[in-house]
Length: 96
Length: 99
Image (tube, rainbow over all chains, first blue to last red; front, side, top):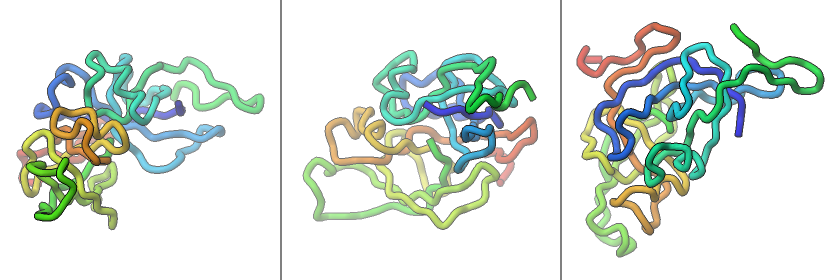
């Protein structure tokens, strides 16, 4: 699992069966200092979150297990809204 | 999932028998600002995507979680056709605006 910042929303009405009603959001993964790490990607928002929020997400096949129907081709899912994260004694991100 | 544009398709007569009847698409990866990158993937199709469509594709073992790709040697699958997206409230892509 990784920390990320939600950066945007994506709309796709035509998607694989079983993904209806699951919001898709763009996220920017963050490193231990809260700085951008790698490219932005699209994840299923299983927990309610919106642009600017600090979240954590799971990638790989496990991401599908977080979705309402688990037999879906999903490789990234937002699974938690982060209130506070600390690494090396330093607070990461926080409300923006 | 990553965003990409369908720029072509693959025809391969001689291939693993488990891939027979599967539509394979050539997808050019785009970044979050809709700028094309130099990265391309060959992905199986699960949503009847067509040439020129902006799509989402999933990679790795997640790509096998469709009826079209289950238990087949596939590591990328197109799983959604993108209508639009925005970044920080500003629209980046809109399907019906003629890009």
